[in-house]
Image (tube, rainbow, N blue to C red; front, side, top):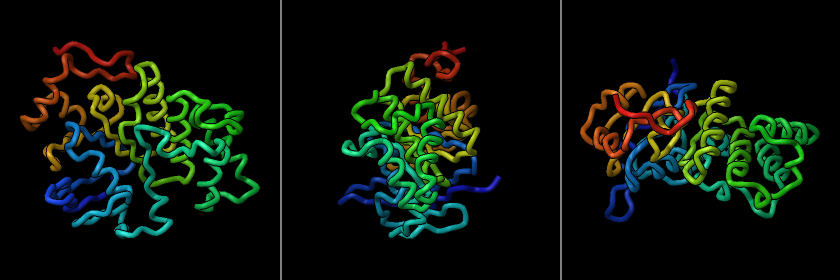
Length: 261
């Protein structure tokens, strides 16, 4: 399987603080890498550097075989899209859903002007929302619905890599489950490659193929999902798992956790 993403010796300093310390990471095409770690471990910083929102001090990022520039072109910006914990970060409250979706389609020339309406409806259908939502505004929707709209917007430009930074943490469990089901459906239907960040190990168990663990700006473990949850390599990973009262169970199976065996 080919690599979708390569991160080589990525380093970010904030004043005298090292936020990312020589990060090396590979992500295979059409798979999901779950990124875990304590608050402040560097997860979101890594995601924002990969997305081009923060410029690294050192290191290189390759998407496929293409090295990404520190100052990215329009095409390079399109190739990596990010979904935030708070969908309001990517949804302009003054714009209708039609404007939000069509703006990205036209800016990146995904479709011609005569095809925009059709494509907007297709995008909403893809995230299980009705076409009548196009004439409404973000504040008229629930948090789960706004997150679906943010997903549709990210998918509108047909990215090579989708980064989701705690996209379900602000949702209640039932809504969380439906959004995770959507992510897994989209992954299967569109052959998505995803970097998925969460502090919730149940979410990571539900969504990931591979798990990467961060601590104090460093990657301390990268394992298959099964290995991480049954035979973690590092003491820190074991501490993360032991902090959970019960072993994670896929949210898609009907619950967050199941007893250890």
